[in-house]
Image 1 (spheres, rainbow, N blue to C red):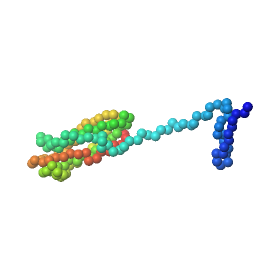
Image 2: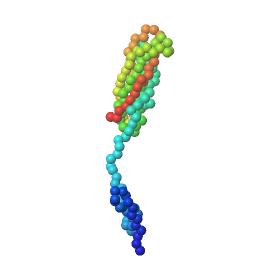
Image 3: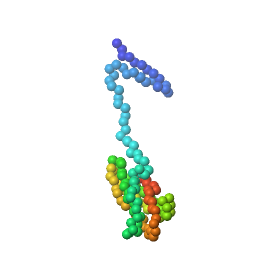
Image 4: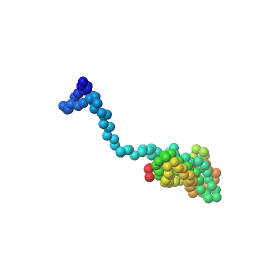
Length: 141
């Protein structure tokens, strides 16, 4: 008995086997590549940089702001570029600029860094102050 054989046109005048013959053995494994794409990440780090405890230290004449930088990646080290704005004024809604601080902080995989950012300023009267992380981005190290 003959095995079943089906031939079909694959285009360009080439004829190829669509159904293997009986007893022809397993089909060869497809070629694989050892190349893999590098991991991707979002460069916006605003959710990984959190500021708390904005206050004025009368003794040092500084506005102080505590930052926590949490690298959520378990594999990659990142350098975080952070821009902090210090502002305030006579009313809770004042937005007078007292100063800015830019800093770069490197954080290893799955690690957290805590630090305090300061801005020298001599307050001579009752003043409302505000601190905020204006922007935060990261790049792979």
